[in-house]
Image (cartoon, rainbow, N blue to C red; front, side):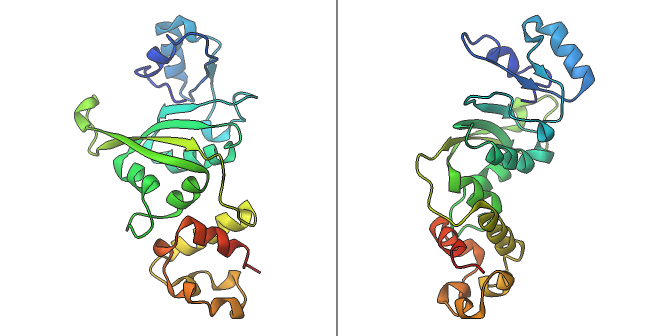
Length: 214
């Protein structure tokens, strides 16, 4: 996805026996890519990544230097496609990459951490310094790998899970009792777990709580 000027794409195009698609919205970049890399013709999806259908019917890997301003939305798109995407490798702003890979108790553990890790094993691979870019950005970057879990912790349903996690972290300074009160009956809210804050809950905790919602 997002081939841009082709820094990564030129190497992907050299791989043998793969079905390759690049997603690029910008007209000038599409023209540049087709002129610079003739073999890419017919392999570009000239649309906004956030609004495309799955590019393949079978399993596929999503790879990219993800635009930092929409990187979270890209992750949610991958979650939509998770049955088709066993692996994704991407470069993000370092603080976002660390957030995705963070564990309970961390100050950066949040919505992305829980929802991505519920379905994928997350490995922080390496840093990418500003000097690797021209012009250099003001922030450090990081590359992470997502590998789809063979077994997912059981939960009630995705709608409930996503609502619970988002509500819990949108008021992360509040106890879970105050942040998610509308989702549970008063009798359930008496449980000690609701004295905790969202960042203290494990994936298992969130999954179990979905079964106790109204």
